[in-house]
Length: 248
Image (spheres, rainbow, N blue to C red):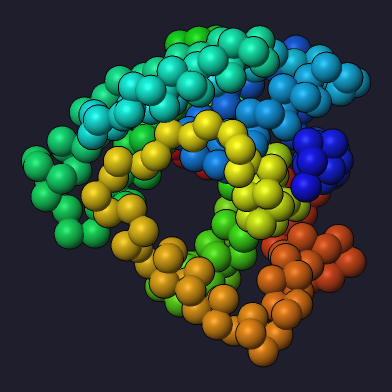
């Protein structure tokens, strides 16, 4: 899939859920993985002609686990080419999670701390919105994670207002499938995740389970995505309440 096709699906989400307004300054949460890199390219491309004018910055949260310097330089070069200011927020999240707290299930604490660091950096850079690279497969997997492990029929919202930080979190790629993103980013630089818990999570278990179910039902993810987002079904999103007052 090319950039134009990615932008088309992203623009659909932007307009359906009213994600961007004139004058927004948006921080892209740039982990450096394929999803956030695709988001950077897409929003940078849309910025040139989108009717509502907005600024972009990119923020990488360094967890203190040792990022590859060459990979970081390659991503920084992409940002320069796209005309996007790049900021690295240095933290000791890795030390806190693995050495101090010694969490047996570290992902939840780590995610909360990374989100806090990202939001703080965004506020310090004068941003009013943070864009995250979650895609349709993330949306579907989160639904099953909430159902199986928390007993809730829920998933993340396309737009969430964080009242204490006075930030709005947007997820512009919720209509994009992971395979589409992989196709676009296969020749793009990435920063590999140094986390020792990477690929050993409940999310990976759900991802594998869904792949097995898809062997018998090729439209499984398409059907679940439709149930979540289709405006004429019992979807989980309501255009009128897509901005949620949620404490960060």
